[in-house]
Amino acid sequence: MLGISLIKAGAARAGRRAASPLTVVLASFGLGACGDVLDVSLPGELQEESARGPEFAELFVTSAVGAFECVFGNYALVTGNIVDEMYDSGSLENFIHYDQRTFTKDYGAYATAACTSVWGIYTPLHQARFLADDAFRRVKEATDAQVANRNRLMGTAAAYAGYSYTLMGEGMCEAAIDGGPALKPKDVLALAEQRFTTAIDLATQTGDAATANMARVGRARVRLDLANKAGAAADARLVPRGFVKLVTRESANNTRWNKIYRYNAQERQTSIAVEFWNLTEGGVPDPRVDLNYTGTVAFDGRTKLVVARKFTALESPMRLATYEEARLIQGEAEGGQTALDVVNELHAAAKVPAFTGSTAAALDHLIKEERRRVLFLEGHRMNDVIRHNLGFPSGRHPFNERFYGNSTCFPLPSVEINNNPNLRGS
Image (tube, rainbow, N blue to C red):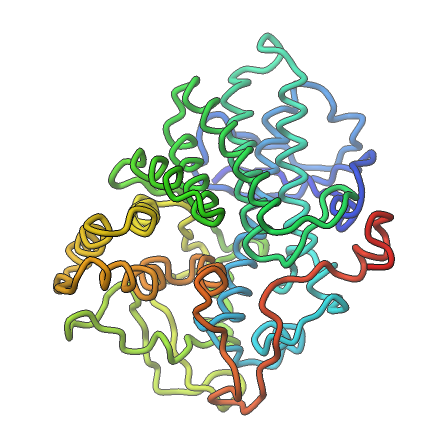
């Protein structure tokens, strides 16, 4: 394991206004095998003035990766509870607001909680996108003589910036960047597309195939969100079979935990929702949603405890970008025979019966079923429900009898509105 450092930006400050001088706090992170360029170990605490030089270029990029990986775990868990992947089955009041969709702009835990808290979303997302953009800028300002692998580092920073903006664009109702005005999701996704384009260009120049393909999947994803189907398909077609980019996890630090495993299997604070129980294809159990029906109840004593076998430990990695996602994007973007071919390719890989319906039926199945099964618990479901109007849970919770609210995206929080001169009075 590598001792990797996270540079913590000044919480919501990074979201409310342009960057001011930062205190750089270095906390231990282990990102596993993250590649030669990002192999760094620098424990301790530094003031920003001490870490301005080009000799810290790798540190800043590695820190951006760590910040994104942290918030990705929170995002996948929280959005999985907002939609129909999981139920809250515990006693954590802050988390109940997500599960019941009663979070509002005044919900402080969502707005200001750090990534160490499972419900921290807004501040950690801004930290991740700020650190990635800032790392890119710092490396760009250096020279090739000062920083080895300079273009490769910039490509990595741009790719993670792209994913940070992607989660913001897909999950937030609006977003404000560095004290600017409120941006609609499509405007934030356009920023993500710009970062991915930069990442692809730089990674291609340096022969960094992993980063190029990670960014191609990301750009295909946001292009599909932006209804650019031709562009999405073009990117998706270039992703090679077998490609996977993982978000690394480990057990030593709660910012590094696989939090779905933690709160589902260990703490029993969440349970897999009934919409995912006993899924089959052609009468055959679907192994892509492999569940343990424990026969017991969860922490609340009421909800049936169903555990996902997808993750088996705190250090179980999570998938960020894959060939399978690229194929799903291509199938949705092109439709017709491509959609049918994609569905049957994925069925063959899962060893379930082929889909025998029409091409139109295959496209509908891809959108409504294949995506939720192949991408189960990977942070996609809320965006799919929004963009295809598939419907959020409503009425009364099947186990705890609480009623669902009306929130369907993360709002600009009051703390942002009150501290951003471009938003006051909104």
